[in-house]
Image (cartoon, rainbow, N blue to C red; front, side, top):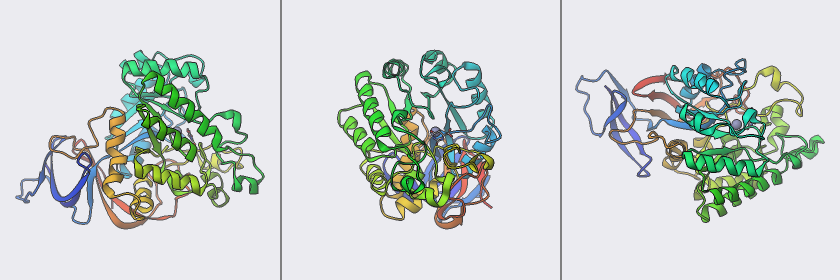
Length: 422
Ligand code: DOR
Ligand code: ZN
């Protein structure tokens, strides 16, 4: 039994926080209230300076395993997740081979089970992520796929996507979409705007994202599928989601910490470390994303943790791969950029980082209640730290060296401490 004493305990379901002690017994929360340390506990954690919240859930990570494990593997990815306060992650399917078959899916799930945190796996929508034929979604769901996505590559065939959504609706699993129409894009990963102009690059304009989100909102409207718009970055895309929600479409949207923190100007300073798909956009877009978080148009914060090697990211801007790591800076960026600046309360932030992502996948975690899973994060929101010494195999982050607030002290999964700060 573990006793966590005196923290700011966040109840994500009630949307409130209160000072309380939390008792964990086995893999469950045994009680929340006032508890004395009577000597009967295996461990007592003083949380007086800390927030005690449900373990964070990240619905968008790339652990590169199998096939690209020089970038990351399931063990190092899970260690990075635990260090960032995450107890559940959903792995994207663009591995090598891609997760379009039961064998690869089972490999990811089985290896994930040995990490100490919950590692879930999405399977691809299309065979080989080629956008031409659907995978056997029913068989993959039965084999343990938590959802479906061709993340990294947009699905350009609307009819194929309609069929995929009908399948997903029938199987009651979410389908997650990477929204960028390549017909508008010359160089991906860099917004087509002022910074790109300075660099003499024709980048990726917002219309690429806006137009595809608008299309997919309507396909979702017509199929009734549970659809998640991944890493939303543009004001137009956000407005489309807002309209779809008004129409009663079962749609959610996720935003990454980098998209609510940085703009396209960052590429001038950070080079390839500010290159990702979809790209960082304008200050107007960034403000719209924050507004979307505030009014509930954006439900979820997800990292799109996308490790690449130092050599790969050392390539010229137009050649280097897109993506940055995010698991070990996500919580602190949320606190520093959203809570400290008064845009969200701590409880709202926790809802978008645990309860809402859990609900998308129909998971029971993300809650702070007696009988709920003993998956918790304990962090000091006022404690500064420098982002460095990542557990991830990769270090491709523009936030490396940044001073951030919100240090994770403990991550507890299934009642076991899986991360503890020094
Ligand atoms: O920047 C990105 N990198 N965006 C994606 O959607 C995929 C990811 C990757 O796999 O590297
Ligand atoms: Zn991704």
